[in-house]
Image (cartoon, rainbow, N blue to C red; front, top):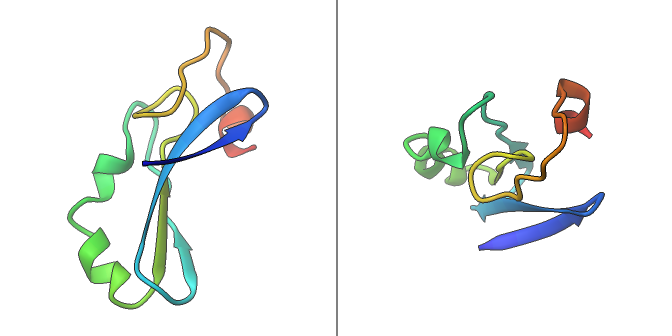
Length: 73
């Protein structure tokens, strides 16, 4: 499992394949698992990067107000 730190929060992400990067972002209340069926086909052609946004999946869940702007940062 890979993580990176952003503004004091450890965010989980996964990478698959090689080539041009393709970032897949899940919806609110979900996780990287949303993409498990698509990843194999996409990874054959792209470097697929799938993060768990703040407060979701295996990323930290800090006790703070969440916002769309915060998720996209």
